[in-house]
Length: 241
Ligand code: GLP
Image (cartoon, rainbow, N blue to C red; front, side, top):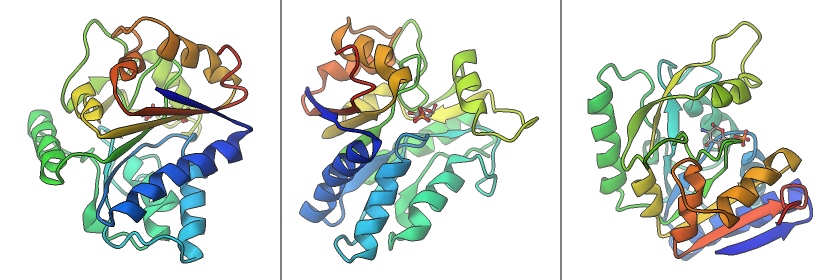
């Protein structure tokens, strides 16, 4: 595990964007695993900036996202498909057919999980997976539990996740209680993993996840066992390291 302590959010974002763009520069059709949430927005802005300057070409790149809310259509402003289009895909030259997310509107949960597993297989696995971390240590929507969920599954979100994510919804709008999420096995099978975290509110979980025991009660802790893990945190999130 390599831990990089960045000066601030912008520095963390620029460093993360450097890692991701290196993948695409080395291999034009690299498969990048992407994440949503507030943390990666700066990273996506940086990638867009380099694209606009002509420094990076996404025309062959492929992406698979970690998760999607169940019950939200792509056009819903809070869906992860909408988020990805808005912050990244609509602003770069990636082909939409090369961008993959679970389908939140799928009726048959099991069939959707199987379809998404096949998508991950069909692209040949993930070259680099970008991750954020939830306050309770979740990655994607792999919530704390008694065991690690291996493959794509439909999860009941914990109250802590629903509360944390409600800040991104309009007042009175209901936060979905379920989501489709890539499993721990798919994440762990990525060739490289890049986790980013910023802000003091993430300081405790960063310490617990990377310097505590490996346990499904803190899903991100399993990343300690990956042989190519880079964690980039800003000074505030590194407070207890
Ligand atoms: C959501 C996403 C995660 C993300 C987490 C943290 O629950 N499913 O992939 O890492 O939120 O979000 P934020 O970056 O906004 O703190």
